Image (cartoon, rainbow over all chains, first blue to last red; front, top):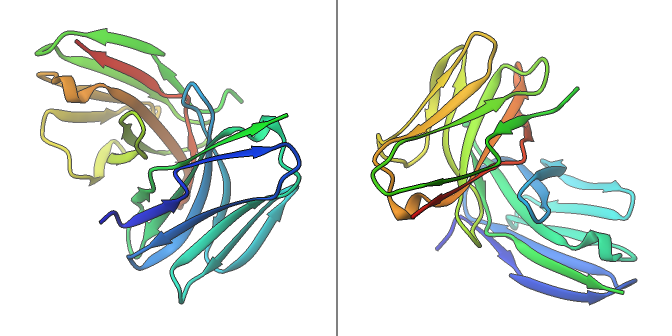
Length: 109
Length: 113
């Protein structure tokens, strides 16, 4: 079993829909990252969380440390949101990131 | 500020050959981490360089080695290439004391035939 699990693996949506991507982890962490990867490979950091909730534009990220679970929400989704969304955790006492396998999101007009 | 840059963008090599990938960190960043991302998978940590030394290493064989130069740029070397080494290789850099906040480069796509 992977230390970081994401669901769903693939997601399709119509423009305007509310999107939720989930991440569960099994290790002790100091922080959790949500990253966006577009075709071609470049990765952009969206959020870094250690507790609570963060919001940036139409994106919202939450984390529940007790349940070892985080969610990434996209409100009013748009075709330009189509990308792979990756959850990564930074384990206690290290600088290493452990990545989930990603959720491929396609938003259709 | 050019951000993190990597070269080359794409590379095709034959089994058994050796390859060198290069990474220039974002201006002011002193720590460089390398990741391997196989198709359809999340990135896997290879190693991290700080002050020209390997500071941490993931579960990769000795065929994977690296180097960091005084200007903080870094190289990833892979010897005796295997077909399974085909992947996107990502470099990420971070500020001194802020390794929790990494900036990723666009990656080098390596194909081994």
